[in-house]
Length: 221
Image (cartoon, rainbow, N blue to C red):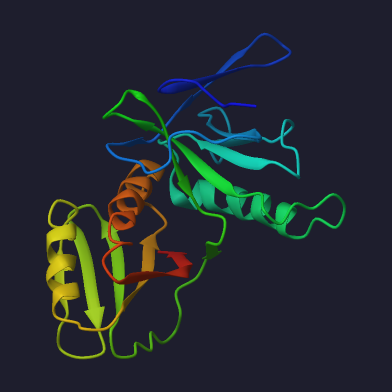
């Protein structure tokens, strides 16, 4: 089955109330089509105390999962629901498909169609580690907001950057290392899901440049 919709996803509920997910926008994506899928939706709902509503009734455990998250949600609102979905799939005992993956659905503005970011092997940790022990060629990137990003290392090569300058600054870091570089990611939980996806999309372009992005991502204040 192909999953093909453009820019904004609409889900019609049985009560005839229309629910809308405003997809996060990206301007590039290596993945534009996925087969054998089922979707879940995280709605932005101002009528609820935490402003988030999860609909997962159409998920099928053996398929690739497309998680459609409203870009207006914060990580504090969205990540607990995403962890819940990840655990459901990882802990499934019956009809488990080891080849099935998880993706975030995005609006790829460069082609005005859908693009996807895989997060199958991402493990979200909702706390800040007490000690960040970085080895040689390891860097911690701390995303406070779009204009305040810290890049830290085990030596004195630590500095601040912004969303606009992130890739250029990381290119300089990578070029100084003859061996593979590992990036550890730390996100402020007040970031919008749009900002989170924008950062992830940028970082994905580094995967062909001798860069490894750690599977554990820390989400905290």
